[in-house]
Image (tube, rainbow, N blue to C red; front, side, top):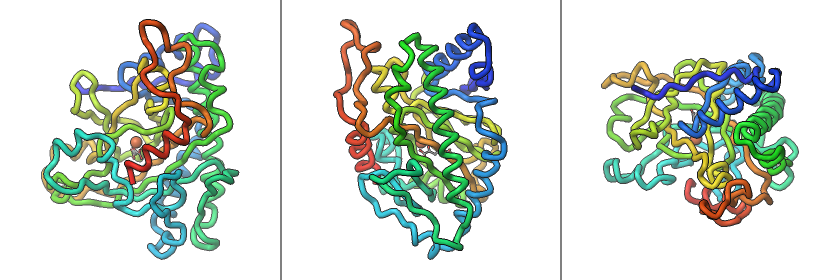
Length: 330
Ligand SMILES: O=C(O)CCC(=O)C(=O)O
Ligand SMILES: [Fe+2]
């Protein structure tokens, strides 16, 4: 039986009676513990904003290569800003198992993306389309960033309730924000190309932050690892207004592996999984990498370190951890 995520009504946590809030929070923690993933409705991201992802994604990625080059991200271990072209990021490098199971050769991701950080980030300033190239994109992305940040903090609150740890244990480590928002475009690709085994929309990986919020279009393609059968992946079925959330590396480290990150990949849409040829249509998605403040330690937190479960990870800063990981990825 493939893994099926229950769609959790987050409105019952946001607006429910105390008992109901605890019940929903425990359900969220259970889904995270069992699958590294949870799926939400009534999550607080308005329909208008979700529709904006599809509208502005298309407007942005349909700019000409010359227009996109004006905000080209030059590979470096620092947080990504601006446009990354196809082939820039190779998620395959994040897990050794990827190379072990594929033919000889470089394993590439078939995707383009736009990345930005907090609107007022002066340490790593954002890069936006030039005036006249995609007017309105910056305003949309900044609005969405704010809402995604608030939504992530509420999920952190729910995790504190569901994990029965003191209020603030997680939330206080997330301020001020150092999150990253990414808009993604997967161009059409032939089954023939994918079947050669060297190219995937995204290879199995985990994200570096605390949690990742994701919206995918109705075509789908996101897959999660079935923890009862490692290295097998099942489609994450979500409607375009449902929010999928996965646990990322920092949460795994903070919780000393009490909750471990969800391994995921992007594959062909669920309805094309058994197809041998043809063209896989283009796909849009957006992910919000909710991240700890750069100076915050990503080492295990006090409630998760006991005599029986000593700390498994060192106390390094979130920025140092980020640089280590981006260095592998680019
Ligand atoms: O597009 C997706 O569904 C997932 C993208 C992803 O996993 C990533 O960018 O880290
Ligand atoms: Fe990811």
